[in-house]
Amino acid sequence: MKKIISKMNPLLFVSLLMVAFTSQALAKNPGKSASSCVNVVGTTITNNCSQNVFVIWCGDLKYSSKRCGDGPNGGFYTHSDNFKPGQSKTLEVKPGKTYRYASCFGKISFGNNGMYTDSPNGSYRCLPN
Image 1: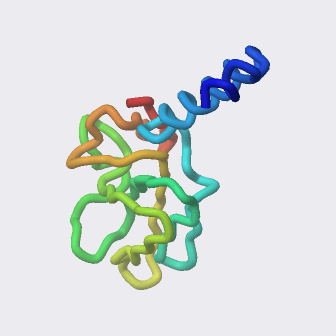
Image 2 (image 1 turned 60 degrees about the horizontal axis):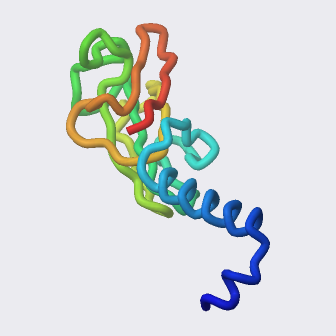
């Protein structure tokens, strides 16, 4: 192994190290939207990526009196859940009613825990953690 490393171009070696460290950093929460990972059909949300994502949502839900805009600290979104790669969840939305959602890479615990910010108009930003 030492012979391979000693014969390797130093620039290539540094580049490989940077890729390795960047990959590890992205495994946490890079503060990026995961909207390209989330597939929605009706009220079923599926994570189609190979990384964990979390989804936040609100709307006319069957078992909640909270509506969009009733989120914590004046936020827009009222509910959240983690989605492992390939995992799906069907939201309990009242028949004929609507909901809105957003998604970020990473995992969330109870509350938003500094994982995202959301505004009363429904815009959101994923935060690195």
